[in-house]
Length: 351
Image (cartoon, rainbow, N blue to C red; front, side):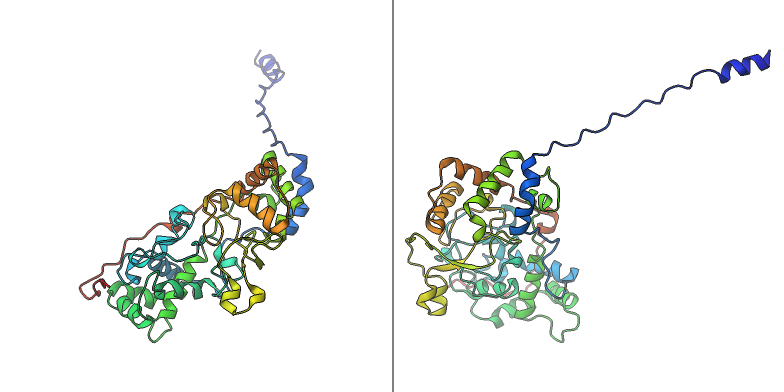
């Protein structure tokens, strides 16, 4: 009897294992595959960091972050790097020109500090070769942070005990680690990590579903019109100097590179701005005179390409530019607690 029961049980059908439904593959617009080689030929994906030949150490990055936010690097201790290049605002302050010492304003728009280290040079006229060199300029500029000289900056830093410790950690081989050059080097080390990977980077890496149909159409229009003639490379701009009003004259008194070099042949030439995060970094142009992105696109078509873009073309291009808006690493950019000033810190100068 037991034997018969065993036979009966062994012949019973096994319970079926439920089959998980296969995940549907994302729909890919055929245009994504068609445009990819052209996009990869014009644009390049961002690296994780923008280090030079010698990668920054964590101690240098941490010190640079501290310095970036420290208003004590200014004469009245009320202006920091972050005042004009706000990291919670895509690296800009949203104003045509930025207020500096005693509310003074320069005559050029403050560009974003995000992704700046991959540019050919810094400032609109390229007068600084690197972000480290750029960091030295505003601190001593009488309109911006207005410190009288390098020695005054070093004196402030040396008056703060926590900076003594931080500089020694960042530059352990230096006999005297607190120097003006090392201040700039640390700020640059921090800024070289200010990268904002965007959907365009995923697409360039082969993710054909990274861009929407509308963004792909906008990229197609961007490329067909010829915008990539100037806006190319890793930063999608920032790789060359071009005359503003190359095809149709643009009205401006600022001679740009020509004024810096004393060369009339370079009058009205400026570094081509990056288009990364461009929808977040207005107002636009060297003087911040253009309020909206659509107006900027329209004017660039006219003055640089001698093309009267239609409203549809402008809309398509601006839609594509939205795919260049990246993600900000909030933890990396987080404002640190300020180093205690101690009693030795010089008081603000009322002048």
